[in-house]
Length: 362
Image (cartoon, helix red, strand yellow):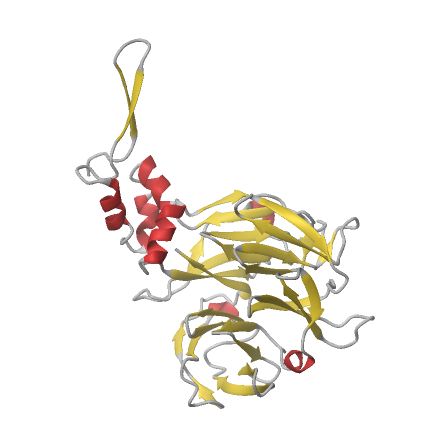
């Protein structure tokens, strides 16, 4: 392949330097080149970024991502944060459209994070974020790291406003939220931080309805729902909901919270919960009837709890111990209440615990 896409300098005399930019692909206008390159499958993007500096810049650019989204060329992969048998964290990725669907290890996690617990793990834009956390001999930290999936690299990102551990982490309206949890002695447990990509910075706010004991969280109907654990002040499980239009937190509907007994995911505005109290049973919250309905039971041969849920389109991925995965299509609910098989993805040899799952679309 001939050399393409870098800047060249030519000098006409001692005082003038002319800078010319080579085309992305020799002989083609850049807009046509982008049209061609954007159709290259996502798994080859790291290879494209090695061709030249201009190719690397375009693969990592917002223009590239906008074009792929606009023309429905973008691909969604699933990322799982796990803890191995040595009590260290590790990260795996799954391409659900690959002919050989299997989880693959992502190398190069920041060494400072390897033994932390209670970290946030979420995707925003074209990056993954690993936030906060704490250890046996380490207080809660405000450190944040981001993973560029196009470059396959981790870098340190803007720090949280508040050091946090075991907190809720969600994305809403293209902003990243870090909510509640356990902080340092000087931090407010009733606070939340918001990260804005446009400013590359965090802002902090407080609300007395936020409590440190956080069990789970989801985004539904353009609001953030947080399921809170029991405490001496609140001996029952309850949830709070954040409405960005008012900027306030309120208590969520008690009927909905009553069935939120496990990991949750939202598909087409419907809340699904995996109840693992007796086997693994997928439940859904019926808003009109205001009741929980069983969708079906999962075979214990395919996944083992504790499990995490993540969704792509109308497919829910149930990721269990060792990354054993079952894919359930909830687009057709004619067989509500029956045993669900779905397609499955083999687990790894080691029984890693899955801490969190998220999706990243490029």
